[in-house]
Length: 179
Image (cartoon, rainbow, N blue to C red; front, side):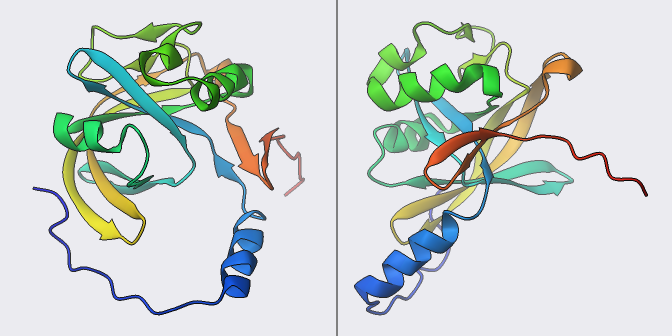
């Protein structure tokens, strides 16, 4: 099922180009998401910004996950993953996921661990249950195509997303620009 795409060819790159790439990407703001799944009956997850919509028909997303991430193989084996968009009120989830391991990442937050194929954060601005439709090799990462099976949306007043930019967390501010 997974990694059916052609292997990408690579060439040697200089350390300077790698550093400049990291600097350039640090200037992009990305929505912060908790990507979740199960390994057996234990919840697993990681924080990711490499998430984007793919298509509305069928509703689908792309998620890029480092092959060395602790949840990578569990996601691959389970066949499902959750995309939980985090709000600024959920910055503690990022802290918890980066400082804890395994199921401990899911303590101290209100996760629905029973109603879906994957853990969904109850108050997240958006939570999506995705079945792996395909995946591709992306050098150090696997590029997962997720076919969305269900979506959980929170109160529209809580729909602001948490952003990662320049090695730090930020919140988006709406600009009132006259048209």
